[in-house]
Length: 152
Image: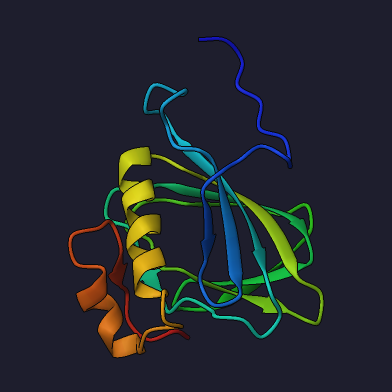
């Protein structure tokens, strides 16, 4: 199968979740189902996901630029550029941009089929703008994402 290279000019599936713009770099096909990878740019003041957890997906985030605030329902930590965060399946988490600079980050997710299903469900949910928070669980029924309670 050889090396797969995705450049900035390579056509890729793109997502827009109300100011969170993502690009699917690997859907798991070339990694034999080991992981999916995506790059994201989060706008200051853009949509911040509610506290949520993945049932099956382990998630890793590497902050490329800007400053991210990562919360787990009990507290939060500031994650400047160069920060790596590992989020095991079942762990509640949320994130938001700190300051006026967009955040660029790389996300690697285990269980790529479930990750892509989740991205597709979110894409449909955000087609008309951010859905009401109380509708998120209903919209995401059947994918690997569920509410994890109120943020700290």
